[in-house]
Image 1: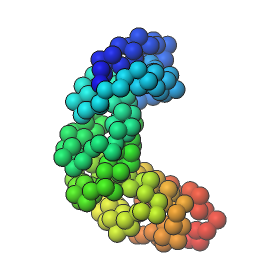
Image 2 (image 1 turned 180 degrees about the vertical axis):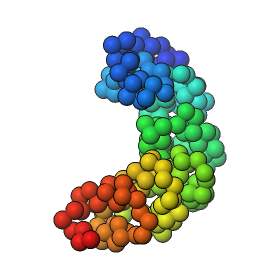
Image 3 (image 1 turned 30 degrees about the vertical axis):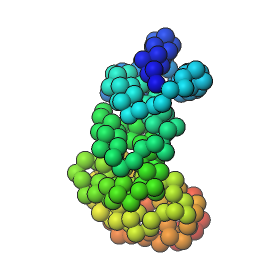
Length: 221
């Protein structure tokens, strides 16, 4: 796939008016071209209409290596679109990408939209996600919690509990927020499980508040 063509298409749409506010929103950690999500998606749609060649990890890695954040978003979009192609053999390279200049904006796509489907297809990937629970890196922990975010009835509850219970005391905002988010989402599928889990001793107030956001009328403590 001619990702350098995509690079040119995105660079042509650089918008200085949007650039500074977008960088400020991300705490000035990353440079931006200033292309908002709807326009970026339109560019990708146009690109994919014209581009019929196969998409390889090398293509994603090239886009991901570019400094402006929109290229990482484009790489993730294409990785998601072709996610059925990725196997456990690709996991190390995908994790390397995910953990390159990580922040919630990229991790929250990689975890449920790329690693999540892979873990459903391959037990080895699922076990790799389990191993991330015990890593010190907060983004690895967040991946281990959020990769099942969209599982609904396919949720491995034992693994979810393992991920949460072993990360209750990190005092990391992004870990506590992830715990609350996955519980809130799973409550749509299994409310009783989440209501019981919200009683867990040591669950942070942030996690409890986020997890019970739509269950306030049923929480009796």
